[in-house]
Length: 464
Image 1 (tube, one colour):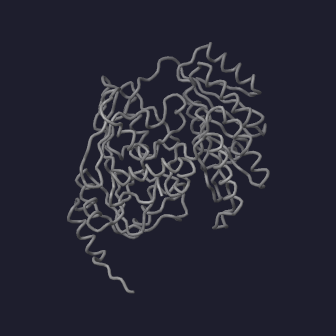
Image 2 (spheres, one colour):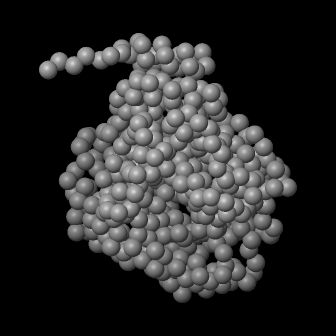
Image 3 (tube, one colour):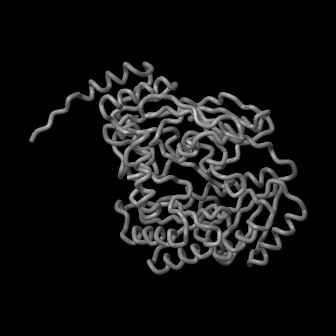
């Protein structure tokens, strides 16, 4: 039987333009493609949006939501569009609601140790602005130079400093959120403690745009630590021994700010990318940082590294050398991804299970004949194995799928999670029941239905 649409795309776009700022609606085909598909995804699970709304303010967001409700159109919240799990890519016929131009730092209060920002503010820009006042913004995702605070909130981004300062959720005091029905609500506030009501602030953090649109964020700022920060590196025969060293350092009282792991394959890729020679020893590398170091902490750190077979230990207090080490860690992804198809995963393990997981990944790669590049934020148990295959092969090889499934099952068996910091999106939402269990999975859907009964906010992302 033939079906007939009640309204044309022209009708929908006319309604949308009547509700938002004159220049906010974008329908240029090239722009639609750019916003709908992220560069690091194949496009599977995504689709071409009908329009983009480059929101200038809250009223634009409310207007776009009104059109979406009227015509039952999906809304895809988007900011800097750096996600790796199809959480902000287009949905066919959707409205992409971009907050990237809502990028103002509204307040920095040293007295209250906080900042108030719009969602489009870039993480690194906020950090630099805070440092001019003797403060800093602690969360340091590897993408801090390009990712937005709004996106960090949406995915509960972690990163390199999580071992000391926590993930995004640990650094957010309050939010303003526009709900699917257009109401703007305020959750949390400016205080470091709050016990009234249910903690809706934490509910929205990591919700991937499925419960509401974040329009304002109040974040914690910390004073720049006194003392001299040190950074350095050490090499280990295997990632398992590196993980054992990390476990010892974590409970030593040293208080590291960064404990980043790179296996031998990753170090070799970095050598090719950066024209260095760190892989000559064919060993795994640990990059570490301590924000407030003393002679005592440095001596204890060196003892723990050498006890666990760490060699070629080097430490520097030179700011430029430290910046180069930091950049080397950020260069990991382009180095590994260069010239080949790739999937980078994101499991997190209890700290006691990190070494067994490293063993398992190495054994799995050998068993399946795969070259796996394993790196990650070892200090908080977050592992990022990357699987690659030739650039001329469009489809993901069966062995890659087999390896991913095996790693996910092993992670859950060890008491871990298969999404530590990269969100769920459409890549992993079918694993909700396996990780959460049927009762919690059902409760998740009840929460979604309460906040978004028409299911217009990023449908099929986060939960399936």
